[in-house]
Image 1: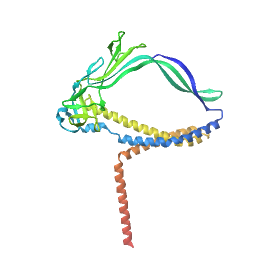
Image 2: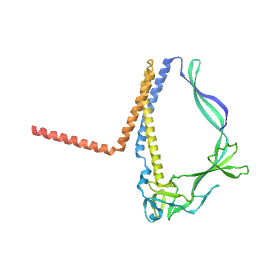
Image 3: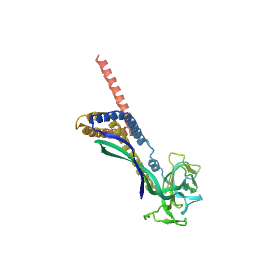
Image 4: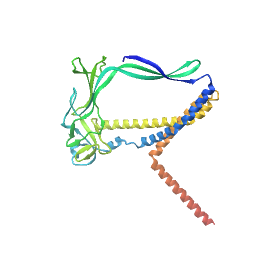
Length: 348
């Protein structure tokens, strides 16, 4: 990807380490004290993420509890169902250069020069002082740019008498993708997506993502009046097998769960580090102590954050169990006090 630099300039500059180390340390201390203001925000966000990670809806669990049924077997029924069958197209739709499909999205892209701006931070020594500069670079980059796009077009269809209204559905498709390049006459020809082609400025291509009309579908959702739409706790359409669909959903949800935990851990780590920052900045006044204090502070913050994430996750998930244990402990304590009080009265 060719690029041309148009301009480059320094947009900001600051001294980060001057000749007077004492003033530099006082500046660091001031920044550390100011930074403690953000620690409560980071900790609150982390707690919110922990609650959300334990409470977000796992669609794979709902889907696993629903038996897979042929669409013809549930005609006239209601409630949540997971049906399978082939789409019966009642109003067709054509994807460009592909033909009749169940669903498609497409975009036309042009290979052209695009102006991009990058900001890079560099550190250098000027007149004996360590200076941090932000350098802004404006350049022209050759890349594919979207000229027009069509998103989420559906054919009208039913499955063995069950009307499907797909708007708002979660899509778990194994998509087909076709790529077409424009020739000198303005017509498109299909290219192999596994083959690397070298575009020239001005070239156009059409990328079509679609689902074929004869794919076996699975639709899960609320059934009412022989219609399934986005009205219940789950509405999902897929052309994968039931086993693969469940596996993919579980994998996606587990990844989301772990990402939320990691983000919560990072927020807590940074929050605790911000609280400890003034102490670390004070330690920096002692020769050789600053670096050690930074390492110990970050390690302590990270370990504390990890323990909180683990313990809080258990408490949130099994809050009812801890509530029962607290009730039992309270009841036992009250019973013990009553017993001891009665025993004391008998003694008197």
